[in-house]
Image 1 (cartoon, helix red, strand yellow):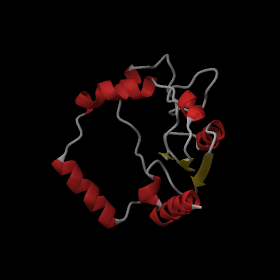
Image 2: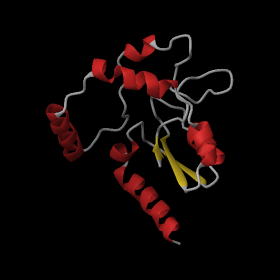
Image 3: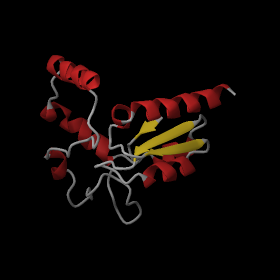
Image 4: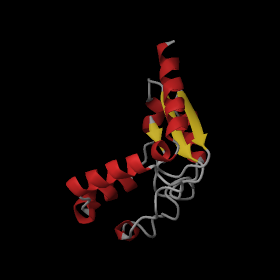
Length: 147
């Protein structure tokens, strides 16, 4: 399952569905800049409190995480999608500040057993912004696996 994550982050002449604005000419310097706010819908108080507590217990260290971001952003997972032997579901936020949601449809077409859903009124944090719709999508996908 993929939640609002393009299989290829860097945009080039063959792929325009990566992280918005990221091309090889800005790579890797742009990855040191703060990212845009991930959500477009206000997160409910309970979820926000859980996230805040987790952040306090385990603060994000941008410098420590930088090598991982470099590696992740340099990858192209489209070939992996094409070899998957298991069902695959891509879920995208229609209003993601990071990705054009069309990546989900294209990703599902690359995967032999691919499906996709684009969730309206959701940004990058689909599961937190639209939890009922996200859970419905996930439950329906899992139920199809049991059939």
